[in-house]
Length: 446
Image (cartoon, rainbow, N blue to C red; front, side, top):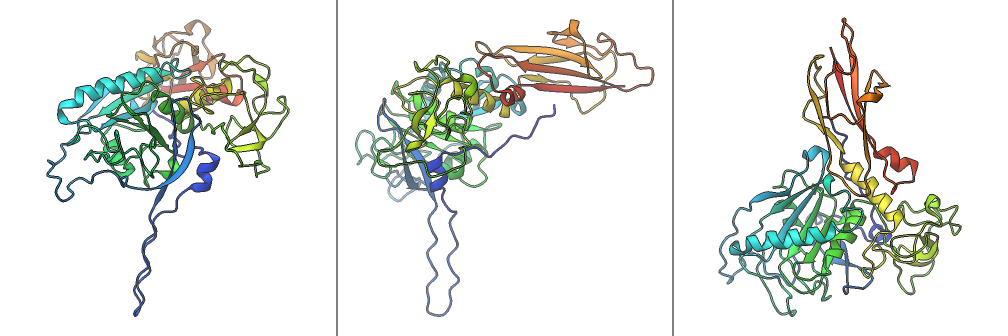
């Protein structure tokens, strides 16, 4: 079926924009006695989480395998070669062209521990998908597991900095000497992600009970990565799932961080931030979320303008006092964040799909069956049919039709029948976002 091109550019946080790394430069050509300049190492800007209830922080680390991890095949390791990983579907709700494809891979799981990895991955995903709006829109996701087999069980830096493990993705705590920062070799992640049928987001579940994780945004991933976000989290810590939930807020919803740093001062810009959850307007009625002003929020706040966000203390405002984008002590997105997430879901996924191709004409007696994504809760899908631009009211909700049943009679003319689904969710108030929830398929009848 035809599908709009997936946008690979995602909003990155203000600090992320300031720290975007420059690709490694080739050394200068050797001329006379002068030596070639050493290439500039690529760096990555990552977000980490100092504790289960802490506000996240930002740091820049060298790209590639973390310094504290073992390199595969390094002298003296005596480790067997890695095996070709298997890829399996944990959840498949529709075609990859019409879904957000989430790829989950483990690190620090040996060949005998792959069932344990699958159980850990499913547990983490179930926890993330209990957070709204993930819960209601889980049906827009496919989930793929990649069995990345490691020679060693566990990951480097667990429990102490001197522990070094040889693992497929080189996961390591104490990255950049920060204990809770769980870095990973994003080049290796990219190689494994390409084995899945498609990859929009990648989660790395590290075989560890130690609390920690990291988030990598689009600009800091290897060039030509097939996905637009990576989050790492430990498998056996009951709060680490919130790291994944927070990071998806960046990579899917384009949401900015709502926390600030002491001493960071005033927001330096004069242009309205691109992210849906930051504004320069102090008056709630002038904020981009004015349609939500005064609403009671699931975070416990009333939607208004609260000063501080995007790492700055003054001159910029967030919608609520707290939220999952401000601190992991909060387990909810605010309503502004929920709306942005729903917009992000529909940027990459379609609620309406069909196996009947729209690229070829159909006959008047051809059965046309459409499928609606299995969304629930906040979602409210309405399916309609039209012929040559005119709605056929009595056909609303039908999943299977023929052109003849809809009233098409050829007589040498070409007609067009269209199935349209609209999400009438009350979680969306912004008209531009509402427009993104509309998905149509059109067939030519001859």
